[in-house]
Length: 351
Image (tube, rainbow, N blue to C red):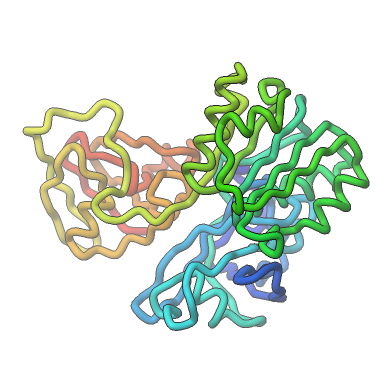
């Protein structure tokens, strides 16, 4: 997550809404939506990060994470390239369908600032492998555009897998970037012969162990790439993967790393709703809130996006976040409900 800005002119979300300024088609079922801050403040982020948007669905507002496709050096706006996961008939229940069939140029949305640890923050010190499947190409586009904008000539192997050639995202632009920078190798593949195995990836990239890898796509796809990297002797610290999935209640987060005895329960009280319930040590604060009918916004449910913030007035929690909250915010009493577990009675304030 980018450091907290001290410049009041930098976009920080909240009441400074994002305005949609352009919509364009990229591939079948895929569109790019351009947003600017209503204040015209610059939007600062790192290549590969995402923003979280509040979408006004008919059944109620929901928060959804979308990866930024544009270069962080062009901070006057952000581009979100989104594949619709359902048809127009699901516009009232699907966030991606709402984006495709209801969002129009000129509309504004509430949003949270860019976040996420899956990002390239500076020019790479070693060759890169950017490998994606389907809409996983979106963060790779941001990284590629960033490398173009800084004129970085580090060797890059760019691999993208899609169902058909018409589904290859950003192909003409990636080819232009590769030609401009040189030392790039491109592999655009289809699923006609099946998803590549770990052995196939190893054969495709024999220097895999020497590269820093950014991988985004379906779980099985990423596991194959990760296995190839590990089998080749690549260090785990040089492999990064990203995937957003819908996580149903009650499986909002993994078990805490050091769970308290299962026989214990703790009272959680939510203000100003004045509602309380007993929480098991393995239940997240978000799970308990939703059980009480308290609508805490959430999106990733994995401690990454920072959407589900609440303020802890008293008590102790065990929080297992993944970069969605800053140390200064934790010191001020804020926690992420999706990855926080009660370790004493808690009084919590909705934000």
